[in-house]
Amino acid sequence: MGMSAHVIIKLDGLSEHPTLLDGHISKLLLPELSHGDVQCADDICYSLSARIYDAKQFVAEVQMQVPLNLRCERCLREFRHSLPVQAVINREVSAEQVEIDLAEQLREEILLNLPTYPKCEYAGLKCENHDMSGDFGLDKAPLPGVNSAAASERSVWDALDAISTTPAP
Image (tube, rainbow, N blue to C red; front, side, top):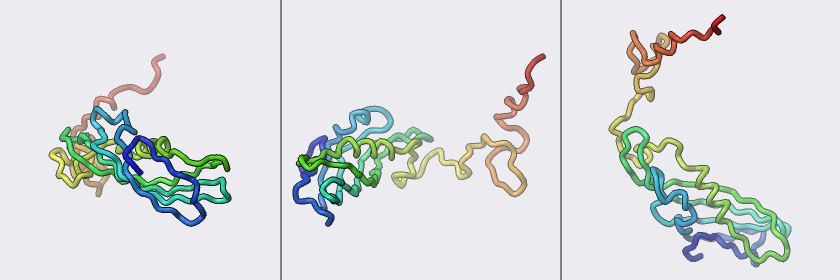
């Protein structure tokens, strides 16, 4: 398979026995990741196992490594991370069909697997703003026996407790 924004699989010769294929997909497959805090850094490597059942059901098990440039949500440091993505694609094909393009399904799988809140730890880095309890001191005073970074006498949320929740007469 050559470098392109398509993943074309030839259907002739496929059977119920897996056919192993690998290649690269151009990072142009992900135009929405060409700028911003999450960017596709390079072409995407994939390997797949393709099968066809009853001459009409195409199944591919795909593994991809997506090289990303990310920005840590905590400390705003930029870092590189290789995102592993696994997918199973199941499509019906017709007897006249000679090839199938998996690019759109693979694109969707990558986008669904993007980290919501990237952190330095993904790349094995130590985050400058790492908080061991994960709450950054915003919690209320914890229940007995629960460890928290929150101060026990005041919380940043105390002002919300002062708001009346009963409707005015």
